[in-house]
Image 1 (tube, rainbow, N blue to C red):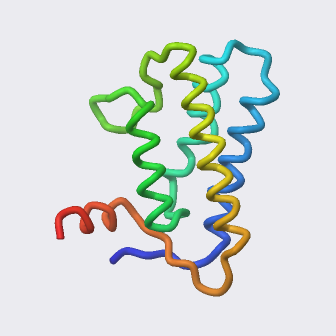
Image 2 (image 1 turned 90 degrees about the horizontal axis):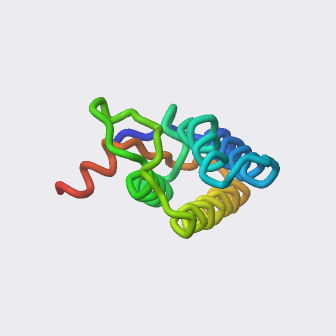
Length: 126
């Protein structure tokens, strides 16, 4: 398994997801633009280093795949075309996920095992 250690990395995820929620809440742009900006400037940063537990990473990957448009290189951050209701659902899911990560980070003590995508791939093929 490929693991990093430490709650500081959970804090990294919490910081970026909190910034995403803050930008959604404080911007005066239309909802779709706010969501796209939060996705590009904050949410995508969670991919930059191992910063989630296996369960949280699984949930994050599912959230990402539900709302991010497919790209040729697999690294795109453009959202799929969403109706207003779908955008509201995406925001609700993002806020809920951010809260789950924050709670996990707050409860973390000692060594926290953080997963990579390779860990998720190995669990589905094993």
